[in-house]
Image (cartoon, rainbow, N blue to C red):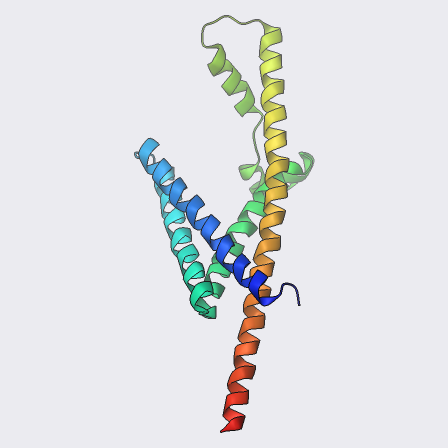
Amino acid sequence: MFLDVPQGRALAIILPSVTLLAHVSSFFILRAFFATSRSTSSCAWYDLVCAIASAMGIFGAIKRRFHLVSVYAMVHAATLTVITFVLLVNILPASLPRSVPVLDYVRYDTNFEHWMCHELDDGFGWDAHWFEQCKLSFHTLSTGAAWASSVLMVAQWWALFGVVRWNIDMKSRKVSWEDLEKARR
């Protein structure tokens, strides 16, 4: 067994709780700071759906309603699949995403570094050396963030598989307990 029952149940409560907190926080932050943007509205709806799924996962783990834990696991797996896809596209060599046109759309653009440093300059008249240092700093930060995100993504996949295994184990135990009770009658 992957995790014993108390550890599996604790993980099944903790993971949806953390994702609920993250999605509710993201929802309110997006609404507070970027209320007029159309893309923010889409993100807010996504956060709302994921928050509801997370609440269902928490309730399902506490009350042992395994179908609710399954709903949470499916929504979280779909989200992690998209995040995994986007992170891999940005970590893989640049030549690979260019060979598949769809991948280029989600790839981090180095023009962002150029634009951001140009915005930071904003009339201060920094020299070319400062501009190159700025771009290098943004590149280093973005690379570090991509790899840190990858580590966190792997940890979430591990936790999600733990929740799914616990859920499957509990479903099978519930069925076997019900079979034993029927056999006794």
